[in-house]
Length: 503
Ligand SMILES: [Zn+2]
Image (cartoon, rainbow, N blue to C red; front, side, top):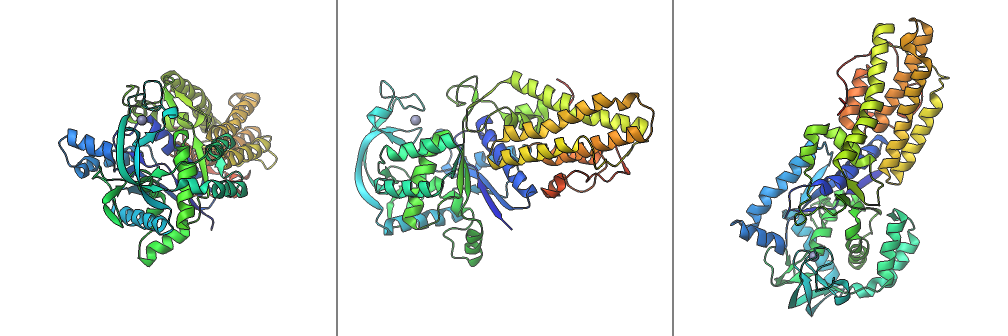
């Protein structure tokens, strides 16, 4: 069985889960569910990044130990993902023992390879980014380009990873693996970063206590990138002596990473260089998303435009929110969250299209077919629409383009609504003609339920049961399950409450 190991970035616990976190996590969840439908052996990982100066400072300010502090925030992420119906197979916290062991192993391997060396660093440092900046990277007035606040001058003895040695090896690797980064223009950004020259980066701090000590020099703790990036391996057993963990790492690695455009440098340049140094296989791929903006700005605590996804699901339902996030943004580009956009998507695609289709089918089957769903025709006029919906949906998920996948799935809903309007079975006398039309519409709904299930899993299961099918929609296997003719006929169709009451 093909294995498919997918990761989201781990989220820094200096903030509560917000829409930006939910965006990437929902895309990861939908992808994971899609690959499960394809019959692949899926392992979907998310988690929290819990070390570093910002956490140490925030904990001090709150009068807590850093461990107490992160122990309060991490469960909020776990809870948010549960409420958003995220199907992650594991959740890694970087304060776990399994993580510390693996980070130290990775550091030791790069140190033994001669790629980590002691040096003095002096430079301008953004505490919020935990990153040094060169003068030409700063905004006017020595402001951090991300946080737009003043950087501080730091000088300290650090260990450095000799990234500058890896330019050719990285370029060669990417040349041998075209399409490793999607969308393509984001891959070109990564190549541009590599071609423009690589600077060694610092991997340790002596000024910091809240982190993982370097295995060969415990005055230093690992900082940010070795600690954070290694989660993708430590979660599946890297660095452990236990044979079961080693087998797990063999089975799952390499991962496919979902990342945001602001962390391309770290994930597509630093990370593969670290793996090359340590002699570990590079990732299977990267999908790079834009930001989900709010009112045209990146969501952040400092700009005060943070949207809490959990507030939205109270109003629009989990699937209403998930659908909007997936359907309304072109993956790779920035999206802009607006309440009006969410309401309009909800009303048009969910209430009017999907909800209305299920409700009119169930009503007509109730009135004209005694509530028993007829079987579809093999030569139905809708069969072609179903085939092209499958083709388009599958192609778009393969390219990590959820909005196009849903557009393709929804084309079958639109075709079925149009088919019903053309045939007007609600006006006809009960009989074979009505049965034929309703059997076709039910079959289309069956296929829609499967294809839409990665995006709106609970709704799909609901549709599945309302049209009289048993078992779990998520247990269906593509492509067979999407072939025309699977609806059995002779089963009870239930007219229930509207799926998505109009807003
Ligand atoms: Zn910054």
